[in-house]
Structures are given as structure tokens and as C-alpha cells.
Image 1: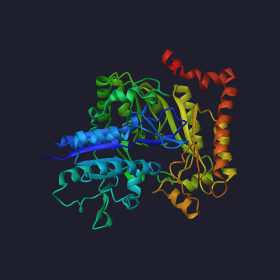
Image 2: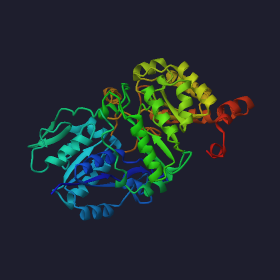
Image 3: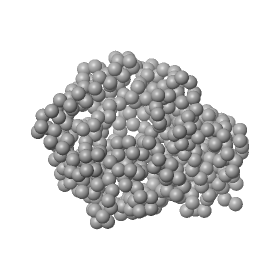
Length: 477
């Protein structure tokens, strides 16, 4: 009898002021579920936060969004899994995962508990301090979870690559597993989730041109070494991409079977391979897929030019995000990300000309950043021709160089789930968190005000705004 595996995304702690949480499709679970089913295992996914109407008050500031404990218990008792895998993507959500693990152990203490995600990959020993956790998965999960499922409980798990575990009360961490190079081999098992639950979530249609929309990934990894990013704890610094045909097959499948009209491509470097980008666009065009797509996490902007952008537009790309991060050369050097602002400005001009909306993500609040350096980022933002700006405050996630620097400067306070990229609780060496939050709000307000002023100029309004309005759908967006 083969093991039964249940994947659970825990209910999520959020600000009580939020009407709903942000929507994320459980892509990691879908890929692990796909490889497990292909090998004969029975799999179920329980994504608690998608049930956004269910809210549990934690205190006056915080609510927990997602299925109630009794809902989760009912699923566990009915499915009777041998193994439960939990997601813990960020340090801030660790307590949510730990609370759920306590519930699972009360229901059945014989269930094997596995925790994965960026937080577990970066800090396996730290996560395993919770003695209810049996295994942490480090890095990519598909091949590791398959080996665990095949061996548990009759064979030793001690030699499995890419895990942390407890052996006779001692925590051990095995060598990392080699990366999966051929991403076409395993497909996401979309049938394991109720797509209508995601389509009905309010976040599914916010800031999208069409709905329903779906998250997908077309590549894994990033060759960058940014101090603030925890991605390399999971994927390393080597980039692997799915083939253009494989991606187009998935787009066509989701479009025809589930009537998906928009795709949010959540790669960290979707356009890193220029030829692959063009090939994918050609696949979409040749198949006459009537879809829209965007790149919320950013793109490898150094591979972009007019040829690529025109092809992307023709294939349905309506919005692009540039990860600029900082406009200060000193800060760029610290975060280990060189950004050629002349190249960015040229791409912005091209996007306006071609008819693609332009977003940019920027970050302030690095530990050694002065007010003078932040002003350089501020000046760029308010004088830019960007349509949208995502301005964040640096957060020191465990496993990053940024965390090490905050810790070295004694800037890591004791609190839980209170700090985030839009409302920080972290002081830096030169600025208080209150000042950083104030700066963020004032920069965004000034950006919006300047947009209105700029758009009063008919020529700028035409070039930077009306150039995108080519049909009624564009106008509605």
C-alpha cells in the first residue's frame, strides 16, 4: 500500500485592516503532486488561505485568514494521510506553520511532518528546533518528496539528499540535491485544486486586464546575488528554463480547459534567454492564443530590445516590471545589483512607443543607506515616466546577506509577524522605521501627484498613457 500525501498551506496571519489576503496559486504543491501522482501516490492539496472569507481574530491588529482548525481536522481525518507537507515561504509565517503542526500532531502523532519553502531551505536547523517537525526539505522539492514517499516508513531516510532531519535527538543536514535541469519532465497537476475557488478570490481580478487569471512559472533560479533575496536558498544561482513549446502547451491547456484569460508569470528572470522569449512569443502567436500576460516579479531587462518587446506585445504581454531596486550607485554596490538607468530609460521609452504598461520595483531602508542615497531613488521615481511604482522597505529574511548585516548591527528586534515590506518595524543604522515608513508614503504620494501634473501636458499624456489605449479592453484596464 503506497503512502498518501497531503500538502497544506497554513492559514495566514494578516493585518486586521485587510479585507482579504493576497492570492497565490500553490505552484510548488502542484509540481510535487504531479511527480507523486505519476509514480502512483494518492495526493491531496489543502490551500487554507484561498478561503478568504474565513477569518479568526488573533488580536486587535491581526487576523488569521483561511480554513478554521475544525475544517482542517475534518480533511485530515477523512483523507488519513501518511505524510503531510507544509509550506513555510517566509520567516514571518513560521508561527502559522507551527500552530498547524501542533494541530496535526494532536490528531495523529504518527503522521510524518515535512516542512519546505524558502524559510526551511535557508534555516533547516532553526526550523527543526520544533520537535514536531520530522524533516525539512532544502531546495527543489519534487525529487526529494518522491524519494521520501518511496522509502517511508520501511527504509532509512538518513541518506536522502536535500533534507534536514533529527537522528537520535541530533539535528543533521544532508548535502543539497542536484538541481532539476529538464523542467519539461514534470507538469503541474492543476486538477488537484478547485480552480473556481481561486477564480472567485477578489485578488484574482485586481490589477489584471482579464480574468480569470492564473500564476505560472516558466523558469527557476537567478544568476544574481542580491543581498536581500532569499530565492537562491531554494534554487541556487543557476537558471534553468522550460522550453517554449512546453510553456505554450500549458498556456493552451489552461486556456481551453479552465478558460484562463490571463497569466501572471512569476519567474525571477523570465526573459533571461532571449531566444527562448522570442520562441515562446512565436508559439503563442502561431497557436492564436487570445490571452494576456505580465511579469510581476520582474525580467532580465538586459536582454530586452525593441525586437523582443514588440514580439512580447504581439503575444499578449501588456505590462512589464523592471526590478530597479535602487538608483544610488553606493546602494547598488551594497546590494550587489548593477542597474544601468540609461538602459532602463531607453526600455521605458520603447514600452511607451509599443504600448506596454511599465512598472518598477524599488527598495529603500538598507542597513547602511543614508537619507542622501534614498533621495537619489526618490528623485528617479518622481521624475520617471513609469506608469506604476512598487516601493518596498528592505526586510532581512533569514538566509540572506541582508539578514546577516542587520544582525551584525544589532538591528534585529524581537517581534512576530509585525513587519513587512510596506510597513516596516526595522530600524537601520541611520534611520528609524518610523522615518522609513514616512519616506515610503511621501515618495509614493509625490509620484502620484507628479503623474497628474505630467498628464496635464497633452503630448506627455498621449505618449505615456493614451499610447496604451488601443481598444475598449485597454480603456477599461
